[in-house]
Amino acid sequence: MLANTHGGTSSSIFLIYIVLFGALYFFYLRPRSRKQKAARLQARQVEVGQRAQTIGGLVATVVKVEDDLVTLRTDSGVELDFVPSAIARRIDPAVPESTDDEPKDETPESGQ
Image (cartoon, rainbow, N blue to C red; front, side):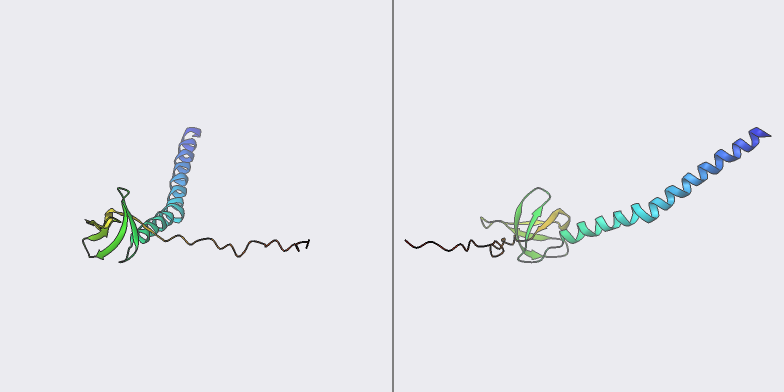
């Protein structure tokens, strides 16, 4: 009789582990995965005139976007066609830091 109770306890613990893993998957892992996928897809969306980097490391300017091809122009003027999935990320232009926030030295100069 004691052995029968022990077998039931181990199966109920196993069931609890399955339920906990399922809850972890549906409430944490799955939404996190979807957010990462959406962020990757948005980073790959490019428009004409923007700079983009391919999965091979080429950085160029987008000159034409079609359903099945993205045309990039390098700085030397060469135009290359890529499939949209080959675009790794969009390169946003760097915003220069403003030096207006730095405190100015306003000590009066001594006249001679």
